[in-house]
Length: 41
Image (cartoon, rainbow, N blue to C red; front, side):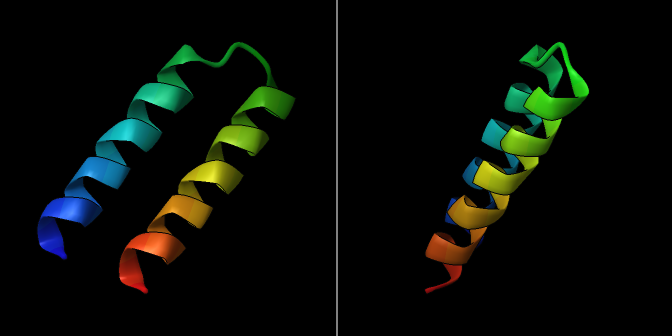
């Protein structure tokens, strides 16, 4: 589980660094949260 969590966090960080707008950041955070939820299940 720790490896999956780390991968999800890294993907989220890359997604946030790539977005250019506030709205894009919100979508990236939301998708990162959903990825974390799936990783925990």
